Length: 314
Ligand SMILES: NC(=O)c1ccc[n+]([C@@H]2O[C@H](COP(=O)([O-])OP(=O)(O)OC[C@H]3O[C@@H](n4cnc5c(N)ncnc54)[C@H](OP(=O)(O)O)[C@@H]3O)[C@@H](O)[C@H]2O)c1
Figure 1: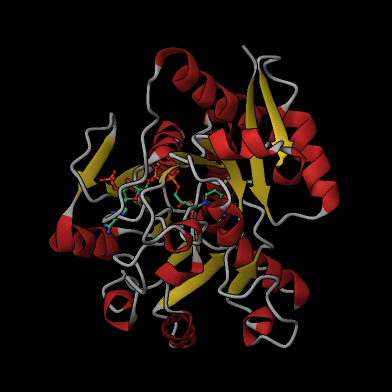
Figure 2: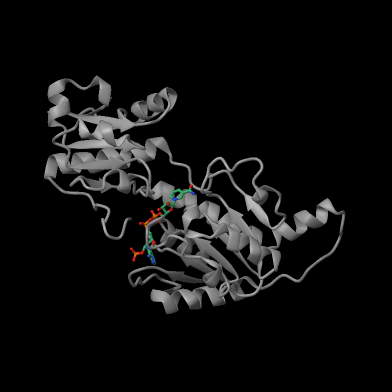
């Protein structure tokens, strides 16, 4: 039997076309249609939907809906949209996404480790000045968040010679990585890391986690990379930390308002590298394969995917 899955989103028509093509290229037994193309019966019977920034009102039309499969790894916008419903959420888990993110983490950690921002500034000022190079094995990288993305990135950093410490909610055992949990664990990671990498999800618990108080615990002159979500980091406190040189440099890929408005002071801050939310773009074909496999596993074997915890928010 062929299963028909509605695609509920607020994407542009060309993005919709690209996703439909990728999603319908995986399994002939799984047909993905935009919500508007479903028959009344199909709308009434659909238990699963694939979603990308869905309008909650569109989801209300699907009376039998049990769970939704997100096309994104971050579900912080989806969870409030589904508050008060029984609908479960499966987020995107894609090994390719984790690999792509670990490429970005390794690239920018190496850039910071080898004083990339300093030499770029020196070039602008035509200054020929060599600085000592720290040993890689004496350079500590702290990875906040050891989930799909954080654990892959942490392993990659360790494999490349860095000393890696990680922090997560529950205890983790990862080869070659020293792991920490809890408030005291966070303090330790902040105070010992030369470079901090944020890969925590945006949840009510991580909101402004890295506030002025926490940033004051960061090792003097350390650098920071945020590839997760802007809400985790207080940008005003960061700006003050950068101005006082307590924090050397920040590489930011995520912002409260995206695109970052052209008049925003962060653009002109010499101690900040701005990236346009590019650290781990979704690969439509690999993401589609993961999403359709999850749906077909449920269809064939009744196996539920790992749903987002409502209380945890991720
Ligand atoms: N910039 C980009 O291009 C891009 C692309 C994709 C994703 N992202 C972002 O990256 C985030 C992480 O993705 P992921 O797939 O790695 O998520 P994940 O698998 O859910 O992992 C989240 C990690 O954060 C930890 N964590 C969550 N809440 C915590 C808390 N309150 N205190 C301490 N640790 C906490 C979790 O701890 P446990 O292990 O104990 O559960 C887990 O280790 C996403 O939520 C998304 O926002 C960004």
